[in-house]
Amino acid sequence: MAKGSSSYSDFNAMMQQLEQKNVAPVYLLHGEEYHFLEELLAKIEEVVLDESTRSFNQHTFYGKETNVSDILNVARRFPMMADKQLVVFKEAQYCRTPEQIIPYIENPLESTVLVWYHPGKNMPMNRKTGMAFKKLSSVFNASPVSDKEILPVVSDFVQEQGYDIEPKPLHLLVENSGSKFSVIIKELEKVFNNLEKGSKIREEHIERYVGINKEYNIFALQKALAQKQKAKTIEILNYFMANMNNHPLVLLNGALFSYFRKVAIMQSMSRSTDKEIMSALGIPFFAIGEYRQAATNYGGKKIVKVIECINDCDLKFKGIKENTGDQVSLFQETILKILSL
Image (tube, helix red, strand yellow):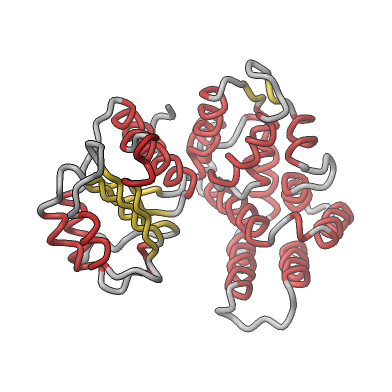
């Protein structure tokens, strides 16, 4: 378990509680990291339900098509031929009257396990319903794993699955996935399915099973931008433009933002040692030189303009700013702007 990662640490703590059959009557599972939420929900189902009576005692509702009164009617019933029943309210973020669940949270039925499943974003914990869940239920907030913590967290996850991974392929995998833990896990599953347990994951495994091109990947694009290699940057850009279906703009842009954000932080750490920088940014030793070069090449106001370009791309992609082109032309525009600084 990676020390310092609250989301991952809390996830492991709740999984351990469930392993010990320590089940709460009410759960709020919310936040951005779908992997944590899905794993916890699956574990709750495994612990609460008996296979022989699952069809009688598993009840799933969805936010867009369910009234809270329907959930309450089922939650207040007793299980059939079992000690407990499970009631899951998925897509709870779409519920129009969440406050109606509060009386039940205040007095839940011991034989019912209610899961309020609110993925994609946090429930507002400063409002009446959120405050009730916080006070009276078991709450897990699946917050994103931070840039500083993502490498050790992924490394620990790989070891927990019975594998090992070298620093360079680990860094490549994280950068290619936009530092999104849920995305990284899905990519790692492809590797696990092709390697025996106990194997060491090398760069060629990431290239072969995740489908990352050896020469044209986000890792190489960032390096080319850092070194201001115009020809190489254009070459890699053309590859991405021709293969955008396999490289979603949201991940590419997220990876660039994470990268240049670290560059900006490094610029503020000019008197720090390599060890201090590695700890603060969560980057491996072999990447220090590249980051230093990027910090020099995008010094002063340039790094601010780089981040503005990336944010502008995000706003246009989401439709917040006007955008007349598709994601291919939008990505091209962003890279060329950065390269011109």
